[in-house]
Amino acid sequence: MDQNVFDDPRITAVGLLAEAYTGLSARFAAQFEEHGLSLIEFEVLARLARSPGKQLRMTDLAAQTSLSTSGVTRVVDRMERNSLLCRRACPSDRRSSYAVVTAAGLARLDETLPGHLRIIEEWFTGQLEPAALKALLDGLRRVRDAVYPGATAGSTGPAPTDEAAAGGC
Amino acid sequence: MDQNVFDDPRITAVGLLAEAYTGLSARFAAQFEEHGLSLIEFEVLARLARSPGKQLRMTDLAAQTSLSTSGVTRVVDRMERNSLLCRRACPSDRRSSYAVVTAAGLARLDETLPGHLRIIEEWFTGQLEPAALKALLDGLRRVRDAVYPGATAGSTGPAPTDEAAAGGC
DNA sequence: ACCCAACGCTTGTCGAAGCAACTATAGACC
DNA sequence: GGTCTATAGTTGCTTCGACAAGCGTTGGGT
Image 1 (cartoon, rainbow over the protein chains, first blue to last red):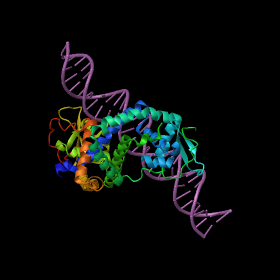
Image 2: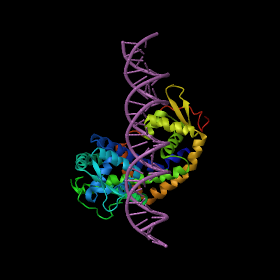
Image 3: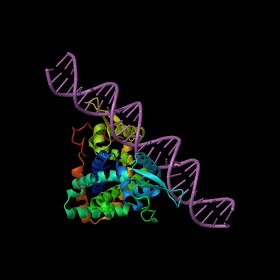
Image 4: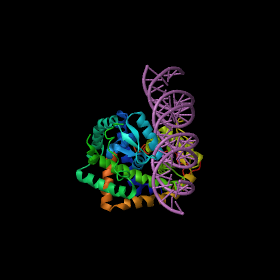
C-alpha cells in the first residue's frame, strides 16, 4: 500500500472537518458542564424550547437528536429526575408522550446560552472574516443538505395544545 | 426568554457543522461496517499505517485519536484479538509498548480505503465546486487550528526501529 | 546510591447509548 | 365488531469508553 494515500486531499478534508468539530464540541462540553448539563442535555433543552408549546413527542425528539428512541427515554428520565423537563400524556394518542420543558429547564438554558454564544463566537465564527465565514457556512450547508436526512421532524406536525407552555407541568 | 435566540446565526453555524459531521460519519460507519471495522478502528489502522514503522506508542495513539489511554488499551485489545495489530515491547523504555499493524490489518485497510474515498467524494468533496471546496477547507482549517491542540503527537519522536514493518509480529 | 515524583499502561467500576424484545394503543380492512 | 398490522414508548442486555486507582519503570535531585 502506498504510504501517501493519507495525504490524499479527501482524507485531509475529512480530518479537518472531524478535528474542527470535535475540538469545538470539547469546548462546548466544558462550558455546559459548568451549568450541570451535558452536550445532549443542552441539545434536548434547546430543541424543546424552540418547539411550539415548548414540547416534543419522544419520537420527534429522537429524530431531531440522532439518538435512538431508547436513548431518548433515558435522557428524558435523567432530565426529569433533575426537574429540567417532565413527561405529559398526549391527549389524542395514548401511546405518545410529550417531553415538556419546565420553568427550571428554561432557566437553566437561559443561564447557559450567553456563555455558549460567546464560545461559538470566540472559537468558531469570530475566527473568520465575514466573507470567509459565509463561504464556510455555504459549503457546510451543501454537505449537510446532501448527507443529513431529517432535522425537522415534529415541527411540521399538528400544533399541540399550548396550555403547558413555560413549564406548568 | 426570546424564542428566536435559536435563529441566531451562531447557533445556526454550529448546527450546520454538527449535522454535516454526524451525517458524514454515519455514512462512513456504514461502509466501514461492511469491512468489519468501526470508525475508531479504521482511524487506528490509518494512523498506525502512516506512522514510521507502522507503529505508535499507546500514548501517542491516544493523543492522535482523542481517546483516553484506557480507551486505547481497550481498542487495541479488541483489534489484537482480531489480528489487525499486535503489541510490541519498546526496547528503550520498558513502560511503553508499541501497537504495530499486522499484514492482516494493512490488508483490511487496503480493502476498505477505496470505498471510503468514494464516499468522501460522493457526499463531501464532490458536492462543491473546487473554489467553494477550497473556501470551506480554508475555513475549517482556521477553526481547527484554533480549537484542536495536538494532532501530531508521536510523529515527531525518535524514529523507531523498522524491523517490524509490514506486520511480521 | 537512594529516594521519589512523574510517566506508561492496565484494570475495576461506572454511566451512556444501541439493539431487540415487549406492552399498549391506533387505525385499517374484512 | 373483530382481527391484524403498524406505531410509541419502555426495559433487559450488551458494548463502549471515561475516570480513578494501581503496578512497574524511569530519571532527576541530593
